[in-house]
Amino acid sequence: MKTVGEDLVSLNIEIIGVSLIMSSLAIIMSNWKKLPVSSHQAIVSSLVGSGLAFGKNVDLNTLMKIVESWIISPVSALFLSILVYKVMERTLSKMPPLKTERYLRTLLLISGGIIAYNTGANELATALGPVVYFGLMSPLQAGIMGTVLLWFGAILLSIRVVETVGKGITSLDPFSGFAAQLGAGLSVFIFTFLGMPVSTTYCIIGSITGVGILKGIRTTKSPFLKKIFLSWILTPLTAFTLSYSISTLFFV
Image 1 (cartoon, rainbow, N blue to C red):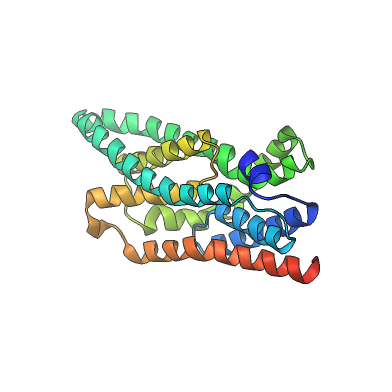
Image 2: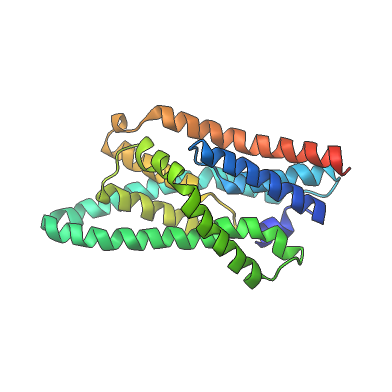
């Protein structure tokens, strides 16, 4: 929250309003088109675009650290998922099949819980940072509101992105699914601890790609990865342009 809400841009109520509305529209449109999108990229880019339009100070050092974390975190998730997969090959794969399946069911729930925890600690914190640090809500109030809306988003729109991430990149079984989830969860947790907003979405994509490469490069579906990579570039550019334009036209 501090990185996005205090360190990045000098905020006012107009910057917060324009940025959150524009980033929300970008995220909803991408989800509707079944494209996994980084809420961090949309929010941070919107804040920077709107902040520049209002002539506010943008901390370039903080911005560069955030951009670096966007690049490094999915790569670290890729390698962590490969490491987890290798460890599992030397342990779980040597157990009887029924016992392995029983362990995997539990491990998948645990890794899913880690991802959910990280979503609140990092993704949700990015969206709520400007609101909290501008004094519009307390961290507790923002956390409760954000949690409820996060649940609604998961119920109403998440299935469209689930199809892309779960099936579009590579075929996942419980074994590789756990390695991907845990690798992504560990990567996001590390960057959250460092106070950097990173995308759980792109860490998951990175870790699934890592598992796919380990299983054989032919199992990885490159057309989906190209679309995702294109989205990784277009999301911040679109959010920045829209926020800068709207702020300039209607407020400055």
